[in-house]
Length: 436
Image (cartoon, rainbow, N blue to C red; front, side, top):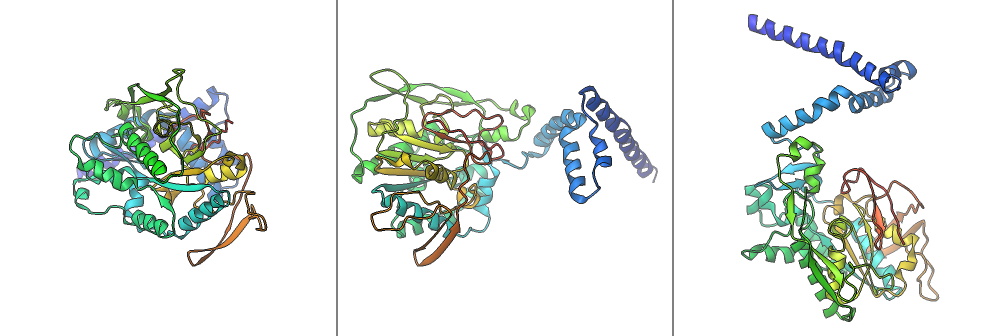
């Protein structure tokens, strides 16, 4: 009984100290900054539920004491409980996984009809211009290495049945699909093969990226869609060390310091004649659309060493690329709809999007008509809506095509280098950057 009373007194004392010390100290900090104390918002606004929630959020994010203590509390939770926050998951042997990508795999399979409608409409729009489409979904890391997430997951025969259904339906509808899932499965079965994905990151490793680039080049050349060019590119070894994006999403420096930066054996693609790093060619017969899987190593260090550059090396000519972080499901096609001149002279569009975007794609899977390009006598598609019959289903979809907005995924065309504060991989930081 006495012990219980002592505990109660301690809890009351701690609460009174928080109220009596933290709140006044925050007022003093606000005044020293020249700001009005946040707590006065209680007197300026009606005490509605929305206003109170807004104030609560503001106090949480702006509290000096909380900002000082929170990282240490989060570090303690990681060390004691392996708590990695709401965006990261800690797997085995220091491997980190992006939580939404894992959620995609364990939740009920989403409806595939919107994905099919969007892909088929895009293919048909391109076909009117005589342009071929090759779709290349990038696997979630956990789809390739489920055993690194949890030991028992390694015994699951198919961890991404929903994605397999999407690929099967696309192929049945006549869409050309490059199956990286099978490619990586074969690679993981070979002893001594380097991992296709980074341990601390959500993206493919340099080795996994090069496997994809080589497979894409073989597919394009064997199909006869393009001919191998005469440009000579060489690969220059440029090792890079950095922390992975998933580890950084924890946003706790104390946790980062528990790990070593990951070494990546990158190769920068250079022009054999000039010695300069690879640069996109706006007059290329191939347009590549994609997300941060295409940006890593290409716009990031070592630069000119990502999928686009290595695909160009394999094909023997430069490419045109449009890259939107977290926005390959719809945003890259909206960008193309605003600038359809990118399709001039193109024979092929290679469209990459990450597997999890089948469910979580930014702005979903809209049908985005590309202005112009209709055959003589055909009615052009409207930019505001389209209605067509595909695979026996009627699809009508409103397409908001806003111009110059800042609420989209970070987008680059060609060699534009985005400069966005914060974690470049997270969709919380959406900024559009266009470099022509």
